[in-house]
Image (tube, rainbow, N blue to C red):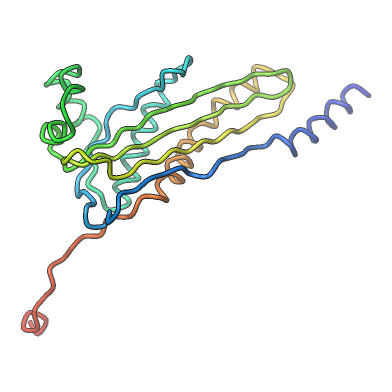
Length: 207
């Protein structure tokens, strides 16, 4: 009984100290982005950082799809993932990687493309808690070859339990909402695209 009470007390203390944290978004954006914002964007297959040892394919797919949907919600015409993949496969991935940004955009039929890199996917399982650290970066390149925008965001969250199997399931099961939060936070630094509509003349307004 005492052991159970001590464990509960320790869990409460750790929960207060080790809940979840996030760093500010690190980003760069080109000057006068509003005038340079691309109308259409292709999101390339998600890449993994060289230091990532354990790679979760489902997370990569989810990051890409959430990124596409986020771009669309901000008035960018984001190409479907399968269309982008088909164009790359038909040309050859190795040949595609050798293309400059202008060549990639021509092949994909868009004004820009975006790279998404999972720089860190670190799952730690200790005695009474588990954590998952996620750090992802985004890069938006124009058809002219310039880097229009980049952002990097990192989060770390914990789950407390004395059952290791339950803890691991809980940690991995939380990555879906976390992917959405990471994309949402990173994209707070990207300007929403505004359509440039030609001004109507006085006589057009009278019609």
